[in-house]
Image (cartoon, rainbow, N blue to C red):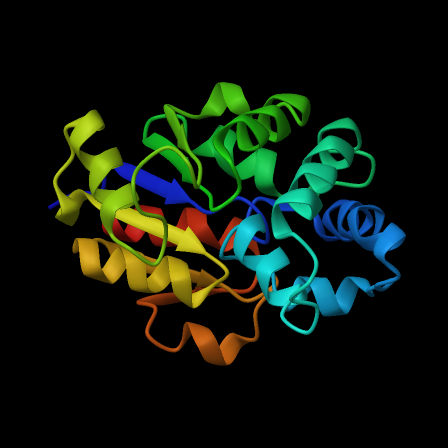
Length: 214
């Protein structure tokens, strides 16, 4: 069936948010004498949502409340969301070139932060739907967010493609029955994208894949 919908991951696929996430983490843990963490350290942990990231960071410190750290993180991050965060080169060009297709974002970032990021970078107007980690009962790698988007937009799995930088995106897409494309420029090593149907070194290559599937 011809392609009708492209689903994008957000962080590491459409936008590079690594520095702002790292700065917010370091703000949140500073008074506890933890860190500072490097951008590389935090980048390797991004993907499963901020709650999981902070829980992982605090494993050696069971006496520290993850709830307090999360609250501090959100306080800082909301106020510095776009200090350094930018779309990857070619993202706006590609979204503009895909106007005839339905487009969605599924992120493991919370929904309001995802929307605020997209609005602030001028990307929201290109999208039909945005889901975050708190939008549905399960998040990637569960297929539930993908299936939710398909249902809301009345699209069959065979008519959709998910694009992301993580095995979480590929696993969610495959479990939902949609085609998958892994971007190699994001936060994860290319090895984790081995099960993707397509690999993309530059987001502009997506146009060729979409035409092939249409």
